[in-house]
Image (cartoon, rainbow, N blue to C red; front, side, top):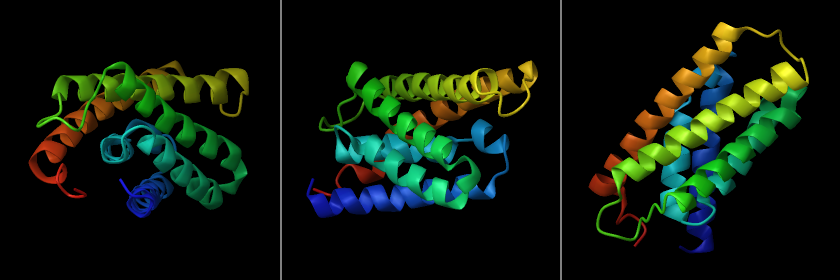
Length: 170
């Protein structure tokens, strides 16, 4: 993919993700991250090796701008989520150049990466840094709803890719 197209996808997807995070209050933005997960999965399919990382960096920069009090954490977790998506796409061998992508691999990669980032973000901000009070029910809800959102996003990304998007930039 050409640099211009990569930049366009990263900027567009990162901006959309950032806007969805800004309008949802905490902790809703952590539980229902299906839009973020879907766009990260699609960016990893579009841009191949580090697509989700690019989008995560754009999203993190924009979210840090909108929420400056915790801007450093917003950038770090958005960037890390993109990296995790790319890493799990690599580990599960998700290949977007074949005729159809393997839905189960994408769903698994997105579920695992979303669960990991949900756990890490909650653990770091609540347990290590004590920025907000610890609530076990909230932690469980974030991990469960985040994982479900990741699975839904993985399925939706595979469906959209196979049905509508795989030939868009060819």
